[in-house]
Amino acid sequence: MFRARNAREYRGPYFEAAALDGLLEKDAARIEALLGESIAANAQFAAAHVLLGKRKLQAGHATAAIPHLETALRLRPGYSPAALHLAQAYQKAGRTADAQRTFALVREIKAKEQTPPPSLLYHRGAR
Image 1 (cartoon, rainbow, N blue to C red):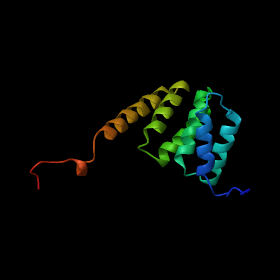
Image 2 (tube, rainbow, N blue to C red):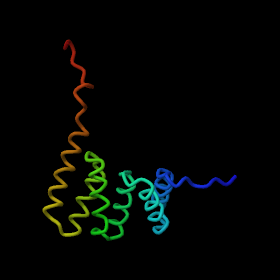
Image 3 (cartoon, rainbow, N blue to C red):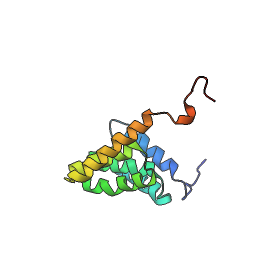
Image 4 (cartoon, helix red, strand yellow):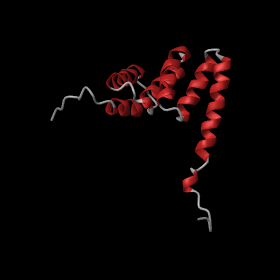
C-alpha cells in the first residue's frame, strides 16, 4: 500500500539520511536532500543541522558547515557533537579564536557529561 509522506514529518527523512550516512557507499546528494527536507519540515530539529554540517565538513566545505553547526548548537547548547564539529569547522576555516573558544566549550560540556547531577548522588547517612 502506498502512503503519501506527511509534509510536516521531519524525523523520517532524518533517520533515512542517518542510515544512508552509515553506509560505506554514500549517496551524498540523496543524504543532503533528505536532510534539507527534514530541516524544511522543522528548522528547530538540531540533529538534522548537525548531520548536514558534519557532512559538509567531511566534504571539505567548512565554511558551508558553520551555519548549520551554529544553528544546532544554538538549539541544543549542551550537545557535544555539535560543538565538536563546529570547533573543527572553525579550525578548518581559519577562524582560530572561534575554534579555541569552541574547543574549550567542548571540554566544558564533556566535563558536565561525566559528572552526575547532584540529585542522583547517593550520600550514606545524609538527610
